[in-house]
Length: 194
Image 1 (cartoon, rainbow, N blue to C red):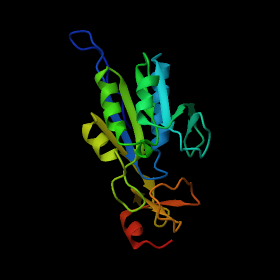
Image 2: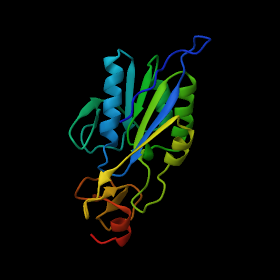
Image 3: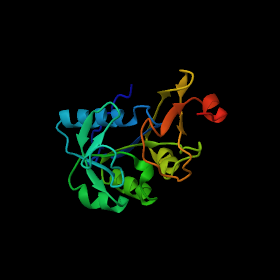
Image 4: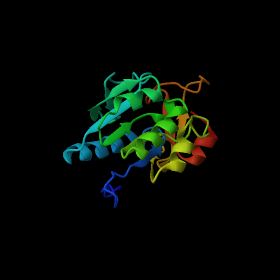
């Protein structure tokens, strides 16, 4: 389990910022872990702002919702740049489904951290073909903390790190749940049979 680091002030009394990335496959608990960390920040009476891409309409428009139905209020945004305009004086910024944002999210996350904010990002590290997904490699490289969570393979029961698409659709983005995706281990993913 990830234990939040002390986010004290530096010797010159400025708030220190940092970037945390939570990554993994579909059904691995990424959003659940994001919600857990954000709730702990709220318990600590920190100012928290939460964002998700506007295109993620699977559950509720103004909430980040996990597959276990846990939720936390959020603001949907269409462009990463919009996040900079909406964070104000907050201490912690949470962003879910970060793989769906444009490449500007890397600069946005860096700017937020440099301004003293704790930035917690959650997203798929690989797409349905097993390739790095969007801005995730850059975000993981520049983060102080990276947490990779795993699902259980829906074929063999081993640990799963891949998202297997059940649909023949070849588009990069296909919003879906258990009707569209399965978590798979490496062997079952590359065996590729539904």
